[in-house]
Length: 344
Image (tube, rainbow, N blue to C red; front, side):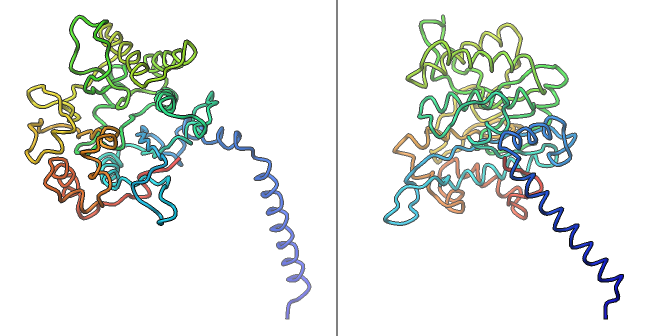
């Protein structure tokens, strides 16, 4: 039987638990979304152990757009799922190569409101091509406030990106990758360059001045006028990046390190990746960036986007062989490790 002291102890303990639960629930209800986002930002800015203390951030953005690539049912022929299985392989390759040296943050359009203090856009209410422009501003803002590396989710990663980031810290400069030039205005260039700097693959220290300039410039473009075509916005950003490269404000990583150009300096096109013959690439490249948007737009090649992960690495296309190389390198542990990546 319980004596009087035991009964008193249990009743007191129960009262404390009930009281603590009540207070916690009240605090949770009072915590507005903006307060929650502020906490997230403070943790990341202060390098909290929860978000990977003493590790730089590697940001991988994924776009979830309504599509009909895979039906949930015959009655529901659209979904908001990614439905591009090969991207699971590319994302895992980045995590496997970089997870020990970076804190990897998987983000989407909803993450901008949580991470960027001045963000006021509801991405669900923005249509393309404006959504792509806002997304570029969001990624520039995240890189400015938190630093690290922004990598496209379609990059097949073969080597750790830490040396690239360390070089940015040493030189105190942002480093941008290259992309095949499809946007620059011929009227404003004496000779059209084959490659231009790209803000879709970039690295920089936290609060880097050059990234801040690019962020502010992109924001100013919105205020100065509306862009009805993605070409116009990309054109302006491309010119700005070229100016900064010319003035030695930024460094540009040769596209041969990310599979954008061959060993001989020729552009690597989507058609080349879909051919059976292998591409002449440098041996020490960081990885290969698959042009995911073009893959979805080109009717001829859309079939690849809907293949299962196993099917994607077993076609005769060059891109399958490149994906298989990444899978084979880590075949025993090729799965997303929860401790290596965080979804925001």
